[in-house]
Image (cartoon, rainbow, N blue to C red; front, side, top):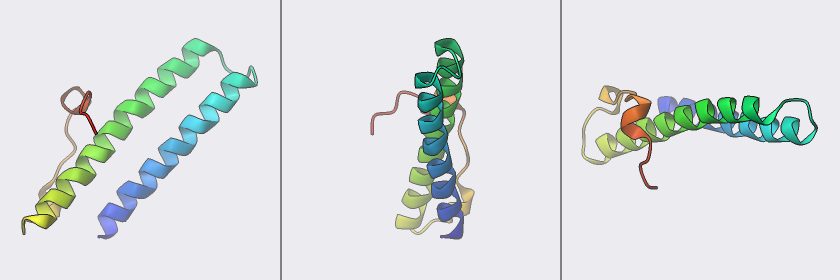
Length: 82
């Protein structure tokens, strides 16, 4: 489960990054275009992390090795409904 904890920690970091971006925009420290570019990148990475975590949990649930799960391209995991 150590790997799962690392993935969750990374997700928390990215959520905090997202909050900082929104705060920076509100404070006028960055422009809307910069915020949107960075948010887009964060959202793609978050989708990949959540997907990897779901894969790992599913493998564990069905008696498979969770370490065989792998990060899939963002184009593959974007648009998944939670």
